[in-house]
Each structure stands twice: as structure tokens, then as C-alpha cells.
Image (cartoon, rainbow, N blue to C red; front, top):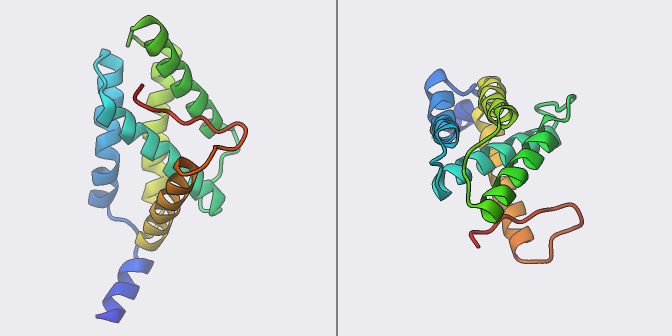
Length: 146
């Protein structure tokens, strides 16, 4: 049994694995484009951004073009505008950024092992629990339902 777990940890994610992990992001991006994204959709987008950020921290992926910061700023802008004006419509450049997220997430996942994916996922969960339980550091934005 241990050797099977070790093999799975070292094995690359399959196409089916990548599609399964990207599918919620794909649905969310499409709903955002239509102007009817819900909390679950935003959660899928946040999860993908957080995973990409963690994979960069792990040095499994790179962020040479500062895409993660652009993604975060775009989502903050969309949600702020939604709260202030009540509109869920996106600007063309925001749609492009979300579509780029979907593509980048799929590309990065396609090169990962199971172990790398689950290590990143666990690190994201630990960081979220820590951040939610304390005052966030400067530059960290906590997005809430209110």
C-alpha cells in the first residue's frame, strides 16, 4: 500500500485530474462573463488564484509577468464595484484576465505531480485558517460576503 501511495505522489496529474480541478473555474468564469456568478463561483476563482500563488511560493510555477497580483486586483475591483453599484457586469479586460486565469491554472496543473498539488492545497488551507483567525497583514484583502 505504501508503494502505491508513493507512486501516486510522484505521478503527474492525469488529464482527467486537471479537467476535474479546472472545471469549477471554467464554470465560474463563464458565469462571471454572463453576469450571474454566485458565491460558489467566486470561491472557485479564489481557490485557483490561491493555488497558483502557493505553487509560485513552492517554486513549482513562476509568476514572471505578475499575473497573480493582476488577478487579485481585478477580482477586488469587480467585487468592490458589485458592492458599490450592484452590477455584476464585467469590463472586457476583466473577462480577459479571468479567462487567462483559467488557462494558466490548467497549464500549471498539467505539469504537477499529485504530491505537489496536495501539498499546495494543504498549504493554502493552513494559510487561510491562519489569516482568517488574525488581523491580516498589510496588503492582504479579506473578501467577505457582506
